[in-house]
Image (cartoon, rainbow, N blue to C red):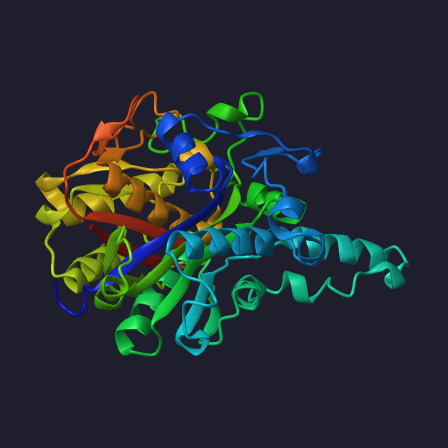
Length: 409
């Protein structure tokens, strides 16, 4: 393994609509059933359903004081970080805090807290605004609160590139380790995008599914009848270390983050390049970074938002890269919706679990593959995966593209 490949994943933490914790999330993904449902917080809006983290008990997990101080995305981030660090067998007494970094991706943080504060101000009640109203909604607070909770004192910052944020954060974390700037990175993404403003804006853009009569069938990546994505939320956190360091302390290596590629479309504020050129560049850069070819990839975890245009463009980009060597393709958003800034990290953690188990979750709600999409999609039931590297893709508004290569341990 070359120096550019030698970054180990030693811990995972997940808070998703499929479940609280990695085990519950995996069970939901492998079942392949959507968790989308009516959302009381969105009542009265054109789209009033979402994929919520439904069984998250913040007081039990975080304590009353911390839970009260944090907005949802911060709660998810801290809880996922705790699980990931414990899974890695690390903690404040087992590391040098100055050598531990926290890098989290956040797209829009949690606008619901801002909405509440603005309503109070406009309603003539500024004295009712919480003193935490501003700090807890800042995008950097997910990383800051995780660092406070874990006692880490190394680099701590937020990557914000819309729906590619979580994947970019993992790539930046890998670069930090390989540069020698730190020894451990707690990296990933967190988001709670279910605010009324977000829902209304995405609906106006035409990005959301309007299948309100059957929300559990709304998110359907690659399906002929897809009509948009479903708002989601959650957090995914991975603990990364240089492989030699992980082995030296006797850690269990769950997978390797072997390659990272990034690019910009420079095309449009919301739409991807129609030929997927930026996506192709990011994927090829990740493959080159890992020292691999398309033939080496055993499966793809696609961004696959379930929007009519984007799924076709992503499929074309994958076709450009893989040609006749197309590996099996899966995608998680049919089950858990689109967690935006957290999506890339949640999906990377899911890829690690797929590699460990040799099993690919099916794409939910894919009844009829769009004829314009020429992919080998995993449908109906889990599929056995060959022991081989995997590609995970993430794309965001503004033409932000990221690709990750993860390899089995």
